[in-house]
Image (cartoon, rainbow, N blue to C red; front, side, top):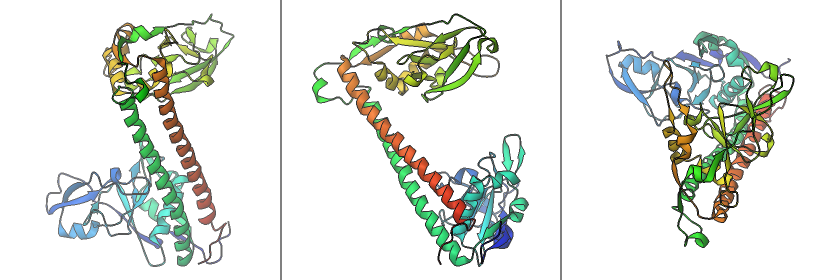
Amino acid sequence: MKLPKGWQIMQMNEAGGVDAGRQRSPHHVAGKPRPYLRVANVKDGYIDTSDVNAMTFTDSEFERFKLSAGDILLNEGQSLELVGRPAIYKGVPADCCFQNTLIRFRSRNGTDARFALQLFKHLLITGRFAGIASQTTSIAHLGVSRFAELKAAFPPLSEQKQIAAILETWDLATEKLESLVAMNTARLCALRQQLLTGIRRFPQFRKQAWLAKKLGDVLKSVNRYEDWNDHRTFKLAGVRRNSGGLFFRDELLGSQIKVKVCKKIHTGDFLISRRQITWGGMSIVPPEFHGYDVNDEYEVLQVRDSAMFDMRFFHYLSQTATLKNLAYLASNGVFAERLRLNFDLKTFLNQPIRIPPTKAEQLKITSLLDGCVLEINLLEAELEALKLQKRGLMQKLLTGEIRVKP
């Protein structure tokens, strides 16, 4: 690709200084304790200072490894998709050094640090860093020398600053949306805790006390076992951990399935994975999974009396610590060297719960929580769209396809 006028190809060690951090070792005892940053502190575009460790540095080591405001830190060792993740150091914490799990890039004259940060984000997203990394087991290493020799296109300094300012506008908008998502998620958690325990109630329902029930009083097991046919296609579903909902597992012929037992699920069923229940592997079945199949490792529950109890209410109840603890109490067993708990449905259905006395109150609660979830989903969709827009803009600005006026 022909470079725009005024642009040049440079190695990273031509655009700035490239250095490795100090290794953490019990042999380093001389000097005095100084704070240092490590991979855990380098997040997506920012330095997390909530958990900063310290180790001893001599005065000469401190001068060598001390960070200056504007230094960019990149993850040297990480998972392949995150190796090279960059963040800029802004002087906090003060008098701070860095570990050899990070690479420091210090801009030279002619290179704007804010532009370099955006360039590194682009190289991460497009897989350039992953492409030069070496991998051992599950950890990829960027490599100081490989990063130093990596080449990229650099526009004139004035254009670098303009590009950085434009892309930082997108970053600011992204940060605001992420903050909104976090605030709304915290609000949902608080409402869920208060509404699903009866701590907060709607005025029209306060006169009636909540009822003490056993889970088996409101829920029952249902097994719609399929007539097996090796020539029939089965659409298989599964449940994610942490109440993450259902997912499509596979579409297979009966002859391709080893264990020849499947049961059908319907909209509004509640699905529990016996093997994943203690990690929150349970969820209501949404309409798009109506008619799918699950294997016999799943429990399928229905409401006993739909006029008195709402499964959507129970779906939200299942996301609380109280219900998850009841599931844990109904699980037992350890096999080999790996924790593996088996779920006992009879014990689970014998556990006590407290519920609103009327379905009307249950529906009022689920309606409010549904609105919170919808708002979060819309914000997350907007956030993802904004990130995609920025990626497209980065591609055009950082290749010179779109030029900016200095």
